[in-house]
Image 1 (cartoon, one colour):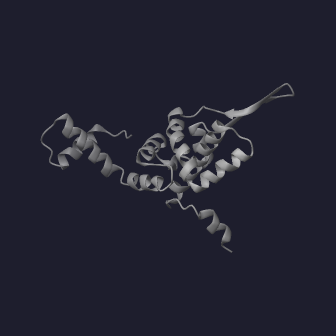
Image 2 (image 1 turned 90 degrees about the horizontal axis):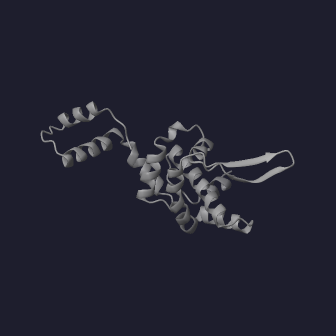
Amino acid sequence: MSVVNPAQVKAYARSQLQRNKTDRLDAALIADFCRTQHPDLKRQRDLLTSIPGLGDLSAAKLLAEFRDIRHFQDVRQLVAFAGLNPQQRQSGSSVRDYPHLSNMGRASLRAALYMPALTAMRYNPILRAFADRLRQRGLRGKAVVTAVMRKLLHLIYGILKSGQPFDPDYVVKCSSTP
């Protein structure tokens, strides 16, 4: 999603020597304009689709939801933006509740992460091992999926910030380097 000045689109249409005006031509022109105002978007989509579990549609939804990753100074801000950060309720000795998701972030971002998290639990070696460890610790299905959604968001943030595609052996390479 992009919000641009309509005068810019009109000037772009003139530069393309477009003389006709129909809805179909306008839609194609606006799409072309956005493709050329955001050249980095394709690279970001390619980086996201390098993560097993994320496809083109999921990557497009995620990029549209959090727009520019540079707006977040660290991954915790992105996690809070998505509403995947834990919230504790405790007061004195009488009120002790289990931690829950804050859900104060974007529900649409959580929805965009749900199916990729399910797929990643099956096909992404890092997230599959992570989910298995959580199940062995006694976490139930929904809690595991939510934790995988959060971990997937960590992967997305790291990959977009570094500009490097997903590497399932990254942890092994880093730990074996002297």
